[in-house]
Image 1 (cartoon, one colour):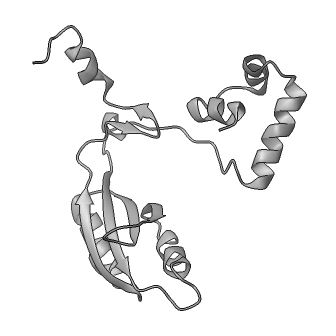
Image 2: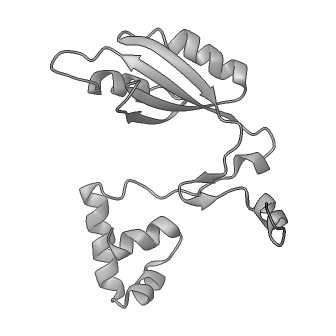
Length: 160
């Protein structure tokens, strides 16, 4: 990965000036590179990684495995587009293995997620079956360690 992209992946809040210093480049060169990456669709956006467990009323996350029947000449894209359009859906991945699509969803409660799967996701044309796995704890997300308190407690202790 390009050094500029690597720095942004670690900290998207770095200014063009800071990036230029870190890369030993001019601000103009860095700004043009960023603009080019955005126009090419390499950079799709800038986001903060949130530790939802520290928030009041933390949402519930689930991974739903979907087995689907791809459409002739459209493959998996048509069903992926319909799944992505659902507001509860955070991420969608085409998978190799026992299921076709990995769908990550967010809801207010486990019941809300279960109803979403039962009434909206599993009823889509082309969906053959679903398997829902609720996320109990996020330890690391997008390369960021979220559970650092427990890690600090274990420092200095010998684990046998």
